[in-house]
Each structure stands twice: as structure tokens, then as C-alpha cells.
Amino acid sequence: MVDTRIVLAGLWVAVMLTYLLGDVLRIFAGDFEPGKIGKGFPATRGMWLLIAVIMLVPIVMVVLTLTVEYPAIRWANIIVAVFVVLFNLVGLPYKGAYDNFLIVVSFVFNALTVWYAWNWVV
Image (cartoon, rainbow, N blue to C red; front, side):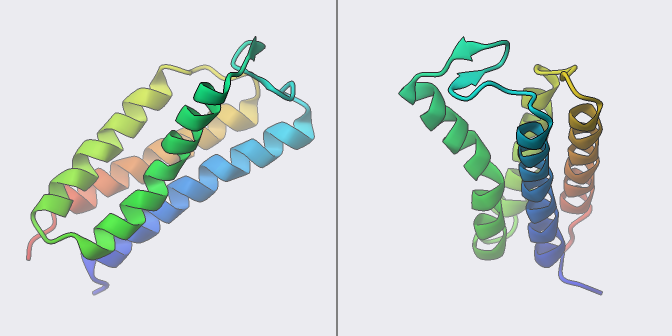
């Protein structure tokens, strides 16, 4: 059996890559205006910083999952995965069908993260 830490880290990588795939498709589909976010609001430097912090969450979770001791990291995975889902629910529905599909896929990865962390026994 694969160590739960590796499974959880892999799920966070999958979440990150799913988000990045959505961003790449959005660029190629033309579903955004450069320098604007959401429904065409001009983005400030502070907004870009906040977006960078949000996009770093899965990357930080990979590192923490591999380094922080059990049981703290078990609870961190559960809490952060639930938070990420709730955060993403606020933005639904998205403009493109591909975006809505990918966010649902990320929800599945987050649900698996919660499931694996919840059932993690050392």
C-alpha cells in the first residue's frame, strides 16, 4: 500500500494541475480580458498578490503533507480541502463548460483528499 502522505501530496498536485489546465484553456478560448478578473473588473496589484497566494495553496499543501507530523497534517488536509471547495463554490457557475467541468473534477480530488486524510491511521 502506498503511504497516505504520498497519496495526499499527489492529490494536491492533481488539484494544482487541474486549476492550471483551466487557466490555460481560458487563455486559448479567449474567455478573459488581460488585466481584468471576474466579470471584467480591473485587477489591482493587491488582487494579483491574493490570486498568487490562493494558487500557492495546493503547492504549499504538497510540501506540508510531506513534512509536517501526523496528526496535525491530517487535520490540515481536511480543513484546507474543505476550505478550497467552499471558496470555489462561490464562483460557480463559470462562463465555459470546460471551467465548470474542471472545477467539479477538482472537487472530486478534494473529496478524495478529505476521505484519505479522515481514514488515515498511523
